[in-house]
Amino acid sequence: MRGAAPDSGTRPHAGTRTRRRRVPARPPARRARPSLVLALVYAGAVAATATCWSDLTSVSGLTGALAWAGRLTGLLAGYACAVLLGLMARVPALDRGVGTDRLARWHATGGRHTVVLSVAHMLFAVAAHVARSGAGAPEAIAGLVLDGPAMLEATVALLLLVGVAVVSVREVRRRMRYETWHYLHFVTYAAVFLGFGHQLTGPDFAGGVVMSLFWYALYVSVATLLVWYRFLTPVHRALRHGLRVAEVRRESSSVVSVYLTGEHLDELGAEPGQFFRWRFLAPGMWWTANPYSLSAPANARFLRITVKGVGDHSRALAGLRPGTRVWAEGPYGALTAARRRRPQVLLVGGGVGISPLRALFETLPGEVTLVYMARRDEELILRHELDAIAAARGATIHYTVDELTGSSGGRSVPLTGRALRTLIPGLAVHDVYLCGPAGMTVAARHALRRAGVPGRRIHVESFDF
Image 1 (cartoon, rainbow, N blue to C red):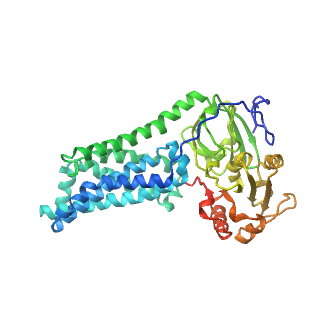
Image 2: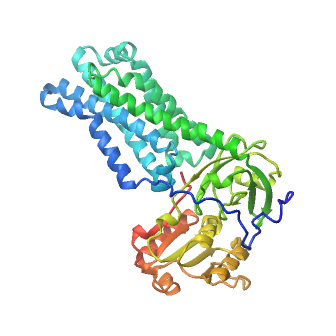
Image 3: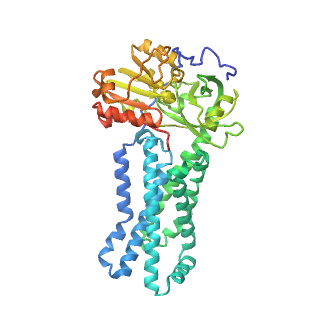
């Protein structure tokens, strides 16, 4: 579908280079190093459990050992809850430096450990209470839950955390709509809120001013980041930039490009390769925000995304009307020029995964080669733009099509290390940016490693989170 086109003198027409308004140079974006982030997380875990470890030598007997183990697992679970929320607070420095997909993997792994620690804390605490009280297990457990300090709230919090863990199991998640799964995760906030009071009743906080201050500082800091970056910042940017749909252009039978216009878009600081979470204020779409990459370099007046219709939300983009209001959260992602370390760069894209790579292909300095993989000719979207960019900068494009029809001008290239070395001379000294369907991405990564490309120079970012 096409709506009323924006001013032809300012819209980024496909396949042409546009004159952009000169804007003041922005200072380099802050990026947190993944190794530094992990070091801080582990250092915080040591600080959070310091008082517990200092009491280890005074532990005696089975009851004392069970109680001590319950203290340790409880402290670690409480600390991990704060860290998990902090990782998903969408702090720009974390997102640009670590990468959204890596943060999501850390969050998922940490979430499983947090649930295990929480359940272990409950089991150790109950076992110690039963051993200490001498009563029968059912009576002791009921008394602990109903009469213990903030125990009823803690029990509800644990049940909520276990419930979130269950719906996050891959087999369960596949049966759910993404939006449903996403909103169920907001239950985590309630679980952490309910469990916070119980944490402060532990022996490590009784009379321990330093420990209490550390705990309050940790949770207040995380809560501030969440409110600021996940709620206040999107509202402010929506009011500041006034994003609206300008045009919807069909690129193939299942792919559309959405052009968006607004004010002061250069202030967003969007880099080629990054994405936003887009919330289109249209019937049936306003309640969900989905991640889509910019498929062209951003400028002061226009942004563009190119999306394949694979779900309800992405298919609905083809029916957007010009003038539809849009909220954009971001920019996010670390698949940017900042990852480049070598003068030679290879971009490997599959299907609509070409979107962020198309923006990088136009802007990355140095010697850039693009390999664009598709199953059929019609899946080679934005080809006229890619050809124009290649001609303008003297770059090389290899189109590889599984089902050759004679019209693509491409060839079928097996995704193996030998085939890639033959196609790209000197491949082992390249930086590689990789984006595409999950199966292709995994196969390409293995092929690149077999071709001699070190893993640290294979840059991938996935939206499978």
